[in-house]
Length: 55
Image (cartoon, rainbow, N blue to C red):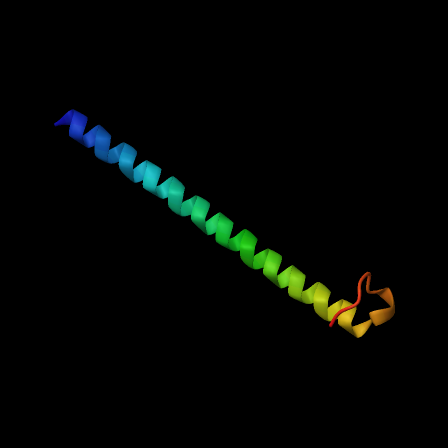
């Protein structure tokens, strides 16, 4: 009985870790997308500062 409880406890901890890592990865991805879109809009407003031509 104790072994089963420990196994379930470890599983929930592992699942919690995985969920937390997925949330952190999603937040990082969304932050990158927002920053990228902001920079693109900023450079489109000031084409003279743009490092490379856009189509």
